[in-house]
Length: 505
View 1 (cartoon, rainbow, N blue to C red):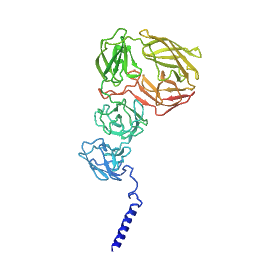
View 2 (cartoon, rainbow, N blue to C red):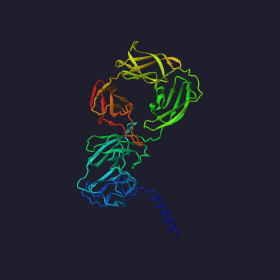
View 3 (tube, rainbow, N blue to C red):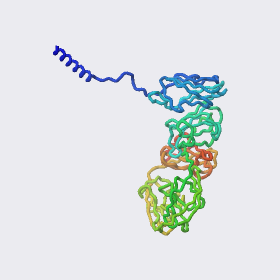
View 4 (tube, rainbow, N blue to C red):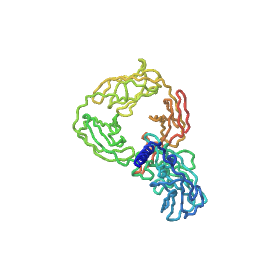
């Protein structure tokens, strides 16, 4: 009997071992769910008309859903809404009757997901009308960053029928990864578009970037709309520090980039630090140590403040001669253009001579700031040659002098000519080409514009320089100011070396 029990125990242990070594298989249930919910049906159905004003909305999905804040939005927004979430459906009831003869849109945002966290990729819309007519017009456009010119994903675009966004928006939409948005089912009337990256709700105070419109948009138009977002800055700049570099010069460090013209009379005697756009140098013909000045400083968005600056008394005598600010080596490759920019470390003058193969090259000089000069040659620089610029008697305002020589290799690249005819109704229009890293401003002759640039693909944009300051002035929600008109050309400009590209816009 004991032997039988031992044999049984041995068999039992072996069975356990064998079962532990058995091959493991995946649990049943099919592949992992990676698909977002899909709408199966809705009451009312999409594009329905003559819907009762006391309708109760129901939307059915193909799987259990999970709803975040602002996952379901209705426009125009009714006064009172109550939502009831079931496993695979949503019921919406209104506290009062809907308006008659009105097109409504139920917007389902990417805040709606399934139980596995799979959000819908782009907003879904169900439209219906409480009258005979359903609004069917739409606006299609793109949202991009005004500084980097890159598309912005997830920006909210709000459509208003009034220009200062006093009432609730008529419709909203959200931009996709490529910056594209569509606002559909709009009436045939002018629409004002505002935009912000405020995450599914309109909050002008907390949004990092915003856009205020310059002109209304007509939904019936077939063209695309381009919206540029700018930093939502409502704080005036401030002076962080003041340093005396010599008896006549002080360096002012600001909290952000400022508009030099806002500094009043001293604007004529300042220049930006080539290495820091938030700093300026101030130089006067008399000693400024210990002096005080009242100034008004403004940033690019028009935020201004009156302040008093006091120049420290400690400083040393300037005995350092001027230098040339270069981003690379002194032997630089340049395209065969007809102008050359040179930036000095401080305001300075020099006797200039430009030569190619020991032959003088004719040019005129022009100052863009006290420490920046442009050499304007009478013709394009020849390809494949070497340009030498000799600076003799290179002196600053304090008699510190030196000499320097710059050598440039003129690249063997044929430029392409771009000529543009414009019917833009703006007397102060400005046109730029942009290749992803650098902007090129077109020259103007009446309503004709032209430029010679390196071969490649470019974006073309324009703005109406209303204040004639040479740069695009953004809008602001503070004290409310519209942006200057800013538009992108709908197609990419391809420039070929030695060829002419003609554009009509």
